[in-house]
Image (cartoon, rainbow, N blue to C red):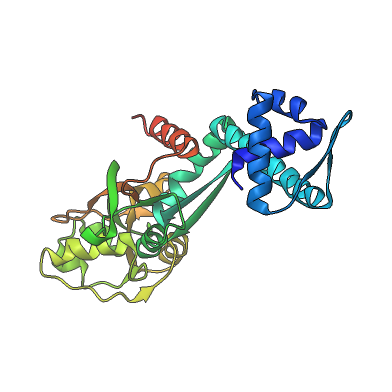
Length: 298
C-alpha cells in the first residue's frame, strides 16, 4: 500500500465512482482501475463492490480502510497548513538560552520588539550561567544561545559569532572609603572582600582571568547566584564586586552604586551568539536574528 494508492482509494470512496475519483487526481479511468486492483491485491481483500449502474460501494474492509485514509488526509492537510503558517510566521515557538547578563539586560527588549512584529510566535527565554546555557545548546534543547565567553570545544560542533563587546567594572557603594584612594592596582584590590557570582558564571570567569593575568588568585568572601542579588548586597556593605557595565546602567546613573576606578585590568569580553553547526535556520530564527541585529545597530 503506497501513498498514491491510498489517495486514489480515498478519492474514489468519497466520489462513489472510479471515474469521478480518477478525475479528482487527474488520472485516466484505466490507470485508476489498475492502481485500485494493485491496492486490493496488496491488502488481500476487496475494498469495493462494483455496481453496474451506481458506481462503487465500500465493502466491510473498504470501510475500515476509509476511516484510516480519512484521518491521514486530515493530518496531511493540517501539516500543510502548519508549515504555511510557519513560513508566514503566523505561529511557532522559539527557544533561546542566555547567560544572566545578556538574558536580563540585553535580550528582553529585543524579544519584546520581535513579539510586537510577530505576535503569533511564542518565545521561551531561559536564563542561567554560561555553563548551563551551553549544556542546553549541546543537547539541542534550545535554538540559540547567548553567552559572554566562548567555552566551545572542537567536539561541540557549535559555531560562535561575536555580536558586541562588553566591559566589566569594579563597583561599590558611594560611601566606600576606597573611593578616596582610587584608582587601585590589582594587587591592592584583592586585599578587600569581594562578592562574586557562582563558578560557571561568565562574569566571574572574566574577572578571575583578569586577576590571574597578574598572578593574583581571589577567594570571594560571598557568592551569590544573580547580578541583582549582588547589587543589593554591595549597596548595603563595604564589599566590592565586578559586573558588566550594561548591568549597572540604572544604578550608576542614579548614584546608588559607583564605579571604583582600577588600573591594569583587562576586563572586556565578547557577547556571543552560539548555535549548532550545520543547522539550517528556519524562518522564525531568521526573523529573530534580524530583529537582534537591528536592535544592536548592525
